[in-house]
Image 1 (cartoon, rainbow, N blue to C red):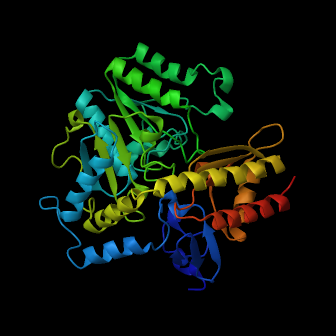
Image 2 (spheres, rainbow, N blue to C red; image 1 turned 60 degrees about the horizontal axis):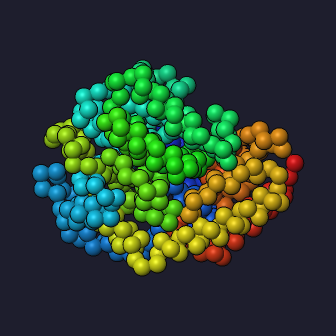
Image 3 (tube, one colour; image 1 turned 135 degrees about the horizontal axis):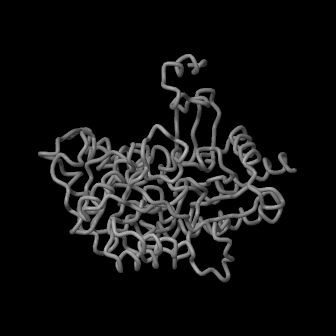
Length: 420
């Protein structure tokens, strides 16, 4: 398949390959059809928390394939039932129910929206600008990044507030004297409206550049929801299952939502989504949110093994150590190169913001760095659907210090070549 574009032309424009297709992966490395080897510090779609072709996941999948590889909602199967119990056991306290009958994060967030509206009998949901919750109609309306997409229809059932983007605070507050105006904007919405069912937020906004809020932000949001009797949803599709050194960001921030949505790292590369929630939100009836290939026994078997690996003694502590090492190496580059305006890191989840000397976001330079890294064999991500100014670094949790050093070497080489 030397001329892959000849085959790609049969695909719809939104999924045509830009780069040569990948033919093999192993650990943190992938190989394309030309034989070029890359360090995958994007974990592909930011989802392969245990890397490519993890042998224990392969073994779990093979074992399940030899038993049964599809069941309907009327019967289900052992991996699905075992996974339901396991997720509740490791979930934040008070989350006692789980819906597994979905294939990814978009469907999980759709489920959360349905539960909020049905339980509270109210339509309006608060969300944030720059947020991303999926690509179904409803999750696109909910996402704060789709304001220029007229085809998704009326967004009147959502109220948008600014997120806690401390490096470029929309309220012009200084971090040292911050009064959490971003929290007060939420409180003001509730003061003037009585039709709010709840708020859905990402504890860490990855797609917009790894926006990490102060811990106090989520604590205060939780308090406000309790005071007003509305629901709090955490979208942990990007943050759960190890990348920040915890199973859930909820654990890191010490805040339990009413509903918690999952995907990506949940199953280490197999299609699966889930929603964990408090008992009172168990309001959906049969036919209201279960999809044909949701809770697929192969994906559930993979997920069980992912959780087994993540919960082994010392595994997540090691992730924290590697995350600190990666952050320290990136801060060294920040000292050396003025183009790096900010390094935001939590565990092995990092945003490197690229800007001019006056602090203005430099999208063109960020894109150039991203593209050059790719040519040099380092796969990263770029914020805002590859149109932003922040390099997103999210390697698999199994990455070694030597592989981190190799990635830093490539990034430094690229920064030197693109120095302005």
